[in-house]
Amino acid sequence: MAYIAVTKASVRPLGGAIVRRFDAGGKVYAGDVVYLASDGDVEEVSAGVIGKAWPVGIVVGCPEGATSATSGDAVDVVTNGPVTGYASMTPGALHYAGDSAGRLSDTAGTKSAIVGFAEAAATIFVRPEIISLS
Image 1 (tube, one colour):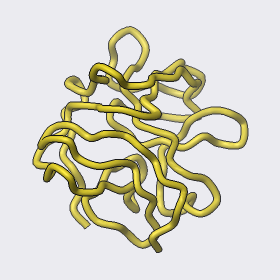
Image 2 (tube, rainbow, N blue to C red; image 1 turned 120 degrees about the horizontal axis):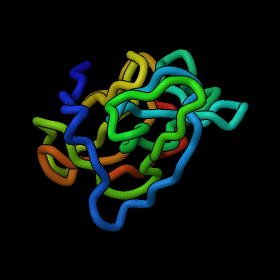
Image 3 (cartoon, one colour; image 1 turned 90 degrees about the vertical axis):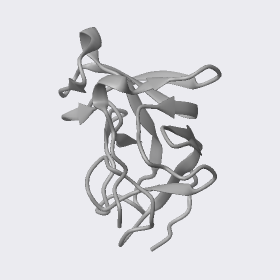
């Protein structure tokens, strides 16, 4: 499994992205893949939650321009559309929520879910799929 490099300070939505605001349920970072927890907060996706919960999107905004947020902070999440700030993705390739919390991967892991596909080396088009590739 190869995790996709992310420059947290460069993560941002591009035109046409659908951005929703949620409360963080724990520590999250710009560029993290998150899921909607049962209490309505977003938390980092990991292999331990795939199958019980699914990716909702990617964190693109944290309080006051920071690159991280803690529990209770409001965060912006792209639920559909383009997000930039990554590196070395192959255009057209699918990308997955990986085994490690919050990480985007170019291959399916132990338990995985599709997050979207690469539009360019630095841009993913977020389009979560509710299927398990385990």
